[in-house]
Length: 301
Image 1 (cartoon, one colour):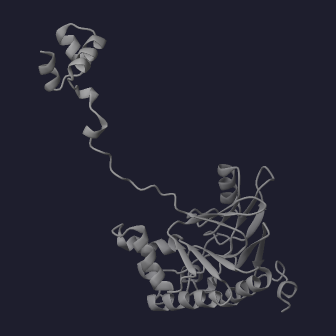
Image 2 (cartoon, rainbow, N blue to C red):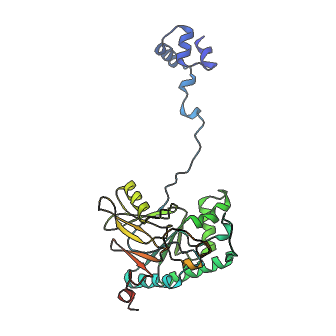
Image 3 (cartoon, rainbow, N blue to C red):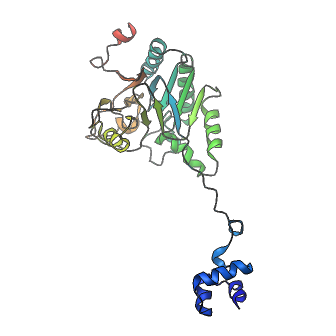
């Protein structure tokens, strides 16, 4: 009877209640007679769980870099783009490296927002992005690109059909066939320096008050410096502990070329232009404002 009970799906406990036997007695009898219960199946009898990817592939780098973000090709500030290369050439040792922390292109053709006026064509965006990357590759031995919210406009068109590697191959072919351009689908990266690790991200959150988001991010991690793109601020300070640097990264675009800025009006802070550099573990910011950056000091121009 015990064998019949187990064959129709009873557990040790339920079979014990039918036979008026204790749980341990039923279990030992089943094992001695080789009777398998519903609750005593081997792992090989179970259906394996699905293989779900783990999203932990963000870039982990170390050393010195020039850092640009929010390039928004074709609305790029080309003077600052050139100066970023000159700073890298003068102050970084080989191999010289550049980080693009999101939004290399506008991808307006894939925007969900209604256009106010005719926007630059997708071909114009692509040509400008290719020009920028080729310009920088004349100076930098490696260029790293992580994706921002504008870049994701294009990625989202595929609706998750393609795997990550295919998306990166397509984006690489779109921008540059040069293997010195390394692209990550993640919007953030970590950089290890002699003064501690940095968290750089194109975090699609906005606050009108500079450094508010960077401070919150630093409080979350509690063990690294933080620099955030996307907000088009330019600011640098220390976190609440005084141990870690926090920064808002300026954009490398000309806001006068952005229709939603020039044709709109708001109380939001003016957008700030510039770029940054990590050198020997120290963070520097450069601006188009001469009261902030003395270009004659840095470049003798």
